Image (tube, rainbow, N blue to C red; front, side):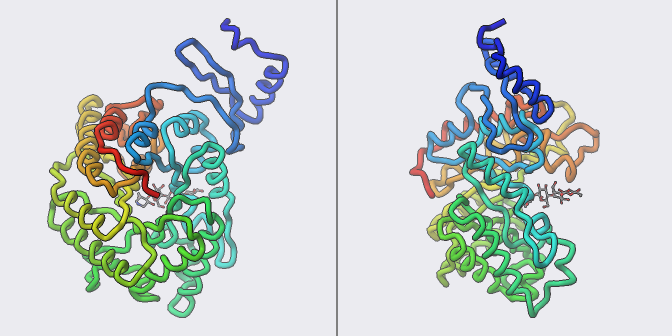
Length: 392
Ligand code: G3I
């Protein structure tokens, strides 16, 4: 037995304790088992040794001045030590997929519950991850009490109080906030292309400017981002959405709204083909407003790709590389975040089931945390990206 595996009496005690409070994880390295570490299942700061392999995605990205990170659910990070270990290995930024939304934060109109989000903030701090907030103002994931409580008379109070309390709670700890998420929906017919949300209904278009001004006061250090989807491809509906977003960004910048970046979600389709010429021009137009650009929710939907896994993985990898090789040409692109890290933990499992019943494979690591062709594609895109000065 390798000598470093001989357990001291103390480690035996820990290990036996650990089987109750945590999980002993054998991390296999090239020379056999390197460490037996107890991963306490509920302590975000518990350290663990990670498998050192070829440069991680975060290291390859950082070499070009780009931040790479991913989204995760607090319950998954807390209870799945292998996910936690690979997350810390691959990512330089963490965005909570759920715990910073209204529904989990606001159990009742006059109460905030930061328990889950605080655990994520502690995990990020303990493992030197940048923390990203998603999202302060959205029309979805509102708590059940919202529709019967918030109205034209009190909407501003609820909006301001929420942003002050939540952005204030994490002030100084947040790399960036999606202050407003998905406010554009051209088909709703509003003259500005704005989505008909309760916020627009109760407060008018100025709710957006108000949200950023309150967020800037609550956390002057955070990058304030407008986050949106549906700008990637060449079809006319994407042209209309890109135009409406650009018009919104220009309007906000012209009135001095404290907006620093556009977040492009980039939930791609593995079956779409695009040379991304229109997207590339859009990125230049956004950058010319003095805005940073963050790719905030990157993944590749494979629900209508072939059942054959090798063929499917090749198409998913191609989608990643084609997209990233174009967007990373734009120096204003500072950050690439995948909406999850492993296929075992993707929202696609619930929302995009495959007709053949096979598991979806939209992310860089497979369900056993092995790098896929998608991982290689993202790594190659970072390696060939032009170097940029690190943007904050
Ligand atoms: O945690 C509760 C659990 O306690 C409860 O028992 C269960 C009952 O349904 O719900 C659980 O919450 C779910 C949550 O994910 C955590 O798993 C919510 O129902 C579910 O609606 C929520 O879905 C999230 C969705 O946004 C809505 O907030 C997805 O995980 C998340 O991937 C998805 O992410 C969105 C971005 O925020 C915005 N851009 C699009 C993207 C994909 O839809």
